[in-house]
Image (cartoon, rainbow, N blue to C red; front, top):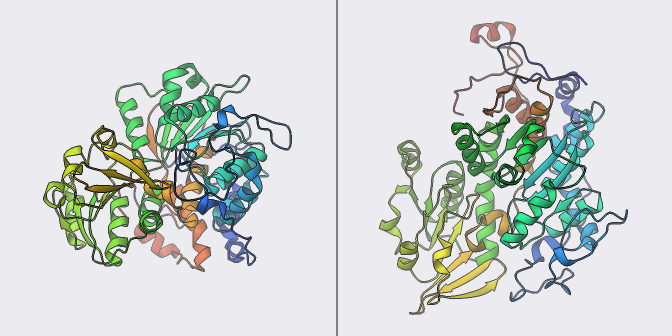
Length: 508
């Protein structure tokens, strides 16, 4: 297999022949499917395995809701039992979900078609820990088509779509995940992915860093055969940089989160649309006139603020970074400290990636019926643990919706127990996730095929050329036509006609 060698002293990413041909044949992207499969009901109404007391009925097979998947003996149609999902019988519904997602993920589908002949991931054994959704399933099946073997667990206890996990298990993927895992289940599933006789991973795809942390903690010798880590979240990247700074990072890692195609699209546009969806599904609230405080004005915070402002909400922002703070002011938002507005706001949204942003003191001072939720990856931003005390009463009113009631009758509305709102309580736009998933796939290919010595034991940003390539694959969906530089223009700007078009320091 041809290695992806770059020119000496330039970006490591160099497009192989099949990719160059692919980029030239853009008309294929314009052929949009016209027949849509019937959307399964199961996504919107499937319940968490911990929600047996929810007032909402589940239309999925709930006869054994009380039985942990770990206690069930399940096999797929091929007789394999190397998986653990809620109900393998839901596979047909999950397959429909995946087929719908494929129609909104043109770049991944085209990458699968173009690269499967070369098999750039032949021999790759990828262990993954991400949200297990229909979009992830398209990524996993693409990795399989490119030659990889995959084992997968969920990075969030609430975001797994049970029917999609069942469909993947039915297709032969060892998947260990279900919606509503306990903390113990969560780590058990990760361990089942990693600790298997006769199979050892040589690549890691992580979202949040929990998988990487588990291997470091339990199976550090595995890193002798692991070629690299691809990480896509703020939290996970922060943990990688901590390892690198301490001299404990023993393999190369690719920071996908700070690639332009992840940060500016998934973090911004995805959250701009899904914040409203998550709040609406859980609370049925009207946004016009509501007072909202958004903690953090990074890309996620920017997306949330833009969506809420457009709906007529009065939006306040908290920030620690003066540059992001100035951006918030210039975008028309009032910059405040949380203490200044906590008594008056109707909604509190955290988007910082930090811990204890909303403390028990803040929660005590909130007005009656204030909605509290988190859009960051980890459940550390809201001090939920401080609410689990005898004097406070918890009422589950819907799936992922709890009323926490104080002795004087005041209550707050806590969504997803402080975990990631959009993937726990709603769905996210497939097309935006196509951009992220394509970036992840190419990052895995780059690290796996890199000659020894190209990447040291450090954290790397995605090559600019790869970012631009991912973006170009999605333009034909909009019937968009790029302008091409003339030879004279390219020489004047000092650029290659085929890119990269911006220096690494360009902010976008």
